[in-house]
Length: 263
Ligand SMILES: Nc1ncnc2c1ncn2[C@@H]1O[C@H](COP(=O)(O)OP(=O)(O)O)[C@@H](O)[C@H]1O
Ligand SMILES: [Mg+2]
Image 1 (tube, rainbow, N blue to C red):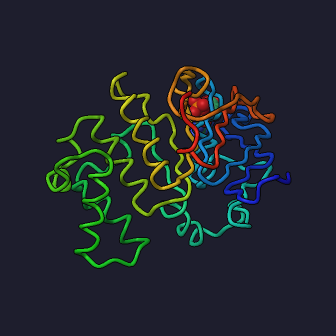
Image 2: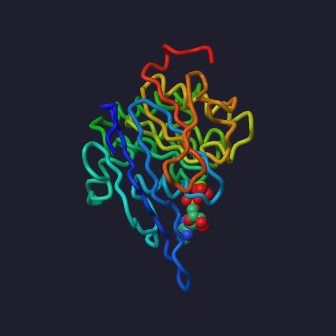
């Protein structure tokens, strides 16, 4: 699938995934899905519950459970197929180049480790920074996701934070190594409406600041452009999904997010 743009980031081609279940026929969760993500763009994947969205999200980072099978297709990134990479090579991609914000902020953080140390661990795994530099970097990340007192948050345990605060921590962790792509799987579905708006605004801000591309997955059309939702400061259009089992793929493409406004 050739692209007219030379800045392809990820190309998902004909991806087909099924789950095997003991005693019954396999479930096809993703059916010949094709999707291109370019640098700095936001792609929204909209679909009903059970339509394969989380399977797609986890498939990109090869985080599917053992009963999942890649039946067909490829996921191209940096000239290679992620599906052909060895586990060790994948670790250089996960968290560093592509990261995932999960649906449930409670699950994305370890309850017994201070939140700052959790983020620091991701940084340590991928970036060459000494201890004090790393600490400073983590505090800056916490500030960037909206905490006015990053030192206090650094030392907090997840249970001391609200759901919205934990999701901010999850976002700080996801952007810690300045990935080129962040996959956000229903990033706000566990939050109440006012927090949803704040978190989506934060994702927009990060995208503008760092040029990060986002794959935003949701069952809720109102968060997408053209539906009165977020990511709507730029022009957008609705694309039917290319054979995928999910409902629709919404694509917002812009080269210069700051240059287009007023929508
Ligand atoms: N670990 C699993 N084992 C078996 N079937 C699964 C598993 N995870 C998901 N499925 C099935 O795959 C389909 C897609 O699920 P999922 O990707 O979670 O959809 P969504 O995120 O859109 O709600 C559903 O039919 C679901 O029941
Ligand atoms: Mg899901």
